[in-house]
Image 1 (cartoon, one colour):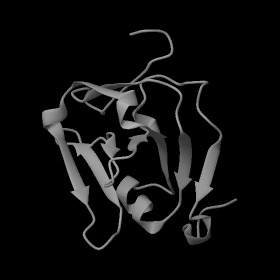
Image 2 (image 1 turned 90 degrees about the horizontal axis):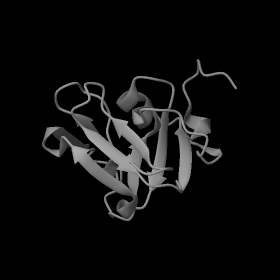
Image 3 (image 1 turned 45 degrees about the vertical axis):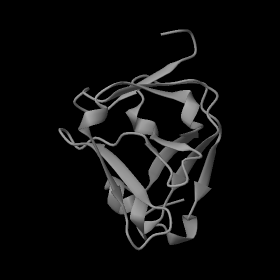
Length: 126
């Protein structure tokens, strides 16, 4: 792994990937779909160009779900552990990478954007 490359994996470690910086965006999304997909108050996702992500192991373990009534909502998880893993947007122009899937913290993350704040859960504080 060269200097600057970020490595990530699912919870059980069977799905493994690398990312080349820079990351385009870091987004905190508070919409109801992201809350349900993560089981938390928000999803925290990074966005990169498809060529910046390399799969190292476990692509045969990935299961993707595209929400049928949504224009662009999808999730991907490891079928063994249920851990969220990267997936391409439906257009294929970007890869969405769950920030928690990184194996080590990075000081190279861009400033976070907040989206769908007005649809946050009532128990989420500022």
